[in-house]
Amino acid sequence: MKQREPDFLVLEYVTITKDPRSGLIVALGGTERAADILQRTGGFLDAPGPRGGYHRLPHGLPVEQQRLKATAAAHALLAAGHSVHLDPALNALATPDSERETALCYLAQLSERASRAESSTEIAEVLTEIAGPAEGLLPLTREAVVSAWISWSHHLDAVGEDPEPVSQLGKTADVLSRAAHHILLARNHAARTLEASAPTTLPPSPARQPSAPTSHRR
Image (cartoon, helix red, strand yellow):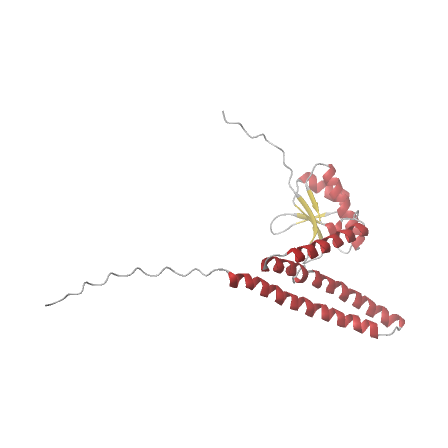
């Protein structure tokens, strides 16, 4: 006799994250009960979308307020039995020390992967982590340096400090950008090395036609 699978009440998954295009904190998915929790606990607003409704925090909230509201909503949803993914950048309970330790652990693992690499493919993967255009370590570091340079430049205008260190910081951002570009070129070369070393499969040679018998006359 065939066993029947039991019926489970599976609540829809809720994702709370930051929309990269608009910068809004949005909550996607969930049931009507989840929507009620988002509105009461996190202050989310319901909004229509091209593929269905979603929830978002109000415009103009300070970053810390965004994190607090998103974290409060996520924990209320979890307590009510919902499955939730909260963007780590929005988790107000994450301490700077733990984030720093995570980053240091990631860098140590990347160094270990590079030292143990046994193929061009593995080298290319490590170099992609370092210099990938969207989420590579160097481009993200450059963004942080540029932000510091802009902030320092505004402060410089206000207090009249020596502009030379600020100028050098701006040049460093360009150096990081060029370094990421050169590492990507090396990454592409490593990836192509594997492609070039792959054995080439030759097409089968056409079947040989039997030659006509030679006629011998006496």
